[in-house]
Image (cartoon, rainbow, N blue to C red; front, top):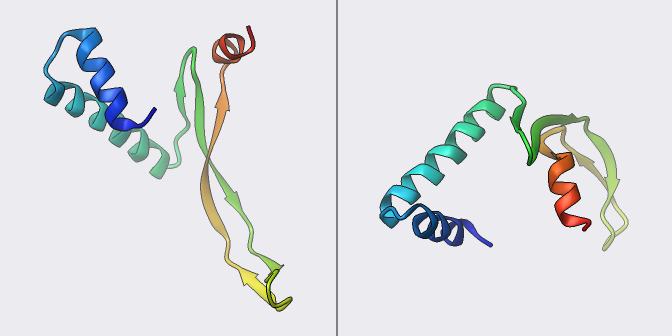
Length: 91
């Protein structure tokens, strides 16, 4: 499922115009992104939580040439599934 599929499903299930569903979905994702950008944890009860993890830089190796490569530190989102969604997936 992609974002447009999600908007279409919400539009049909809630019996609202597609544009309203699009606004709702875009607003939801923007709010999540803003929260993560501020360093906050985003928890959706029954689904899971998102948080930011910081990774230190390290020396890697280019597999093609074998040369050492410096990998910069990075910040990435991390998702942890909630108990309810795990139960749905493992029926």
